[in-house]
Image (cartoon, rainbow, N blue to C red; front, top):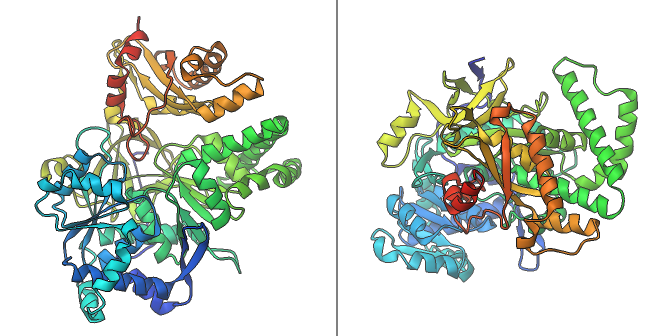
Length: 607
């Protein structure tokens, strides 16, 4: 199939902007809990719709009092926290445009984005961020204000706007139209300088309303249960912003957690107890691997692995029934599933707070087996695909017919087309309007409303999309063989000891790989063997670890031809990190940077 369209479910917005969400919510249901806010002692406090509206209004008045005008651009440089959402909606209330900046950005990256966007003010989280801005402030003539969250800027703004009349703010809010620019989100820049994606209020409203309408089982709670989600994705990323907006528009209690690491996240999942989460595959991998390590430590790994097998078979049987190719789980399988639900699956759900029944995954590919396991364990994970340029999701698996291992069908109201060269093109109201001040780059990807994504994929007979690679990342060996590396890398990474894998081989005689290991998993693996911890330099030469990684490579190679297979690999002592410039803030590999940094190791693979 070359093209697939799904009819719309959410009407295109005709009037207003995103800030109306907050005021309409408070008008319709003022006492309903809109957000959860964690204090310095780690306790969660409820924030009603009316209270949040009042706080947004007060901050909006402060922004006007301190010189922010309709159409001004204001940068937000912070981790994911309550105040980001507060500032977002306050800025939209006065008709300003937010410019999210990853908190890990370097001074030169910050300079480029603030200069390119002609930012009038910046809100940073703490003093380190303020110092980053300060180091380049002399080259930012348009920058008039610098606020710091940890210096009590919210109360400062509330006090500054105390004498501003409410009607002044509402005049600004009523002037916002769906076509008004809501935000400039800079691409994470796996190659080249980041480009500012111009996203309108209409883009976000269509995207959020479509997600809430189509994936209503996710956004609706059981009778008597409060629907809630904990947002831990970076709010500088479009996925996180979509969650923020969809939660408020869908009347879902929203909490924030600033750390994406499993160590920091898991306790907050338990204390906040969300009913659904939106995450990247890394989180589901961590939950699964952590559960398996715990079972192994307790001498129950055999039972755990059996439970995994039953969960996968159970989910596969449900999948076959949904597509009319099977009767569903047999009586024997249902009995086994019920048994393991009590002794294994319940504990996996408890690790995520105990109430999670649905999840959405994006950002990178999720292994089919992992998705099936979670579905069988009682957490339906709907995998999707999207870009900053599509205002988050362009496709996603529908709740009643999830096809694991794919990224689903086009979201309602959009079309996916596969070009002759395999490139994925997307059309819909969620597609952005272009790159700021860069008509050449805009014209290169937008064609009469169609976005050429740069990704390679295929549609099956039911319109489900599978991503096979990225055009710019296709490896071409010296023998002329084209290889899409992402599928190979994901399969190698499925091994619990492997953290990252990057395939290399451009203009080389064969494909090879650099592999990093999960040091927490390796430490557990050594302990289970009765071995003492090893230094990284020793570990990479350990023959047993090499054998484990080789098993992962051999397993990955079974899915491709010999010419596409990984012939050799090297284990590296340290993981690729954002701090070293080897990952984007959304955890994607910077291939050119990695190959440059490890050029000696790559060369050694071909000697």
